[in-house]
Length: 100
Image (tube, rainbow, N blue to C red; front, side, top):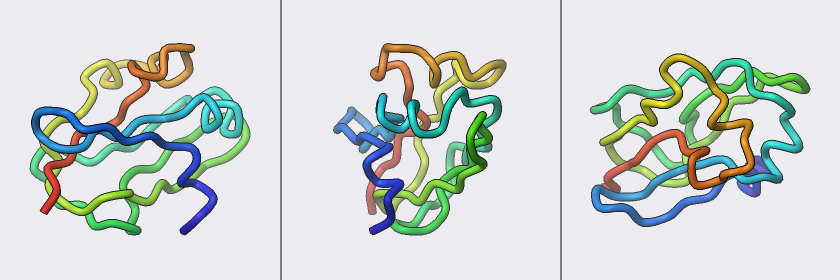
């Protein structure tokens, strides 16, 4: 598995698995300026690219920790990416995935 794994957390939610950014990930990437997220209904595969983030220190492709269908995308990320740069890691989530 890649080093990127420690940058992300997963937790069970009603419709599957929520994937978010850890404080370690925030520190490593720096301020996130842009994130290209999958859309609701997209299929994702474990180990394949889930999303791309553009931050102060790097542009990174993030592999998915799970396989399944995207059931939710964090609406807070539609206009800005402050939720990914704050201290509340629960708010720093990308997508929910209903696992296959």
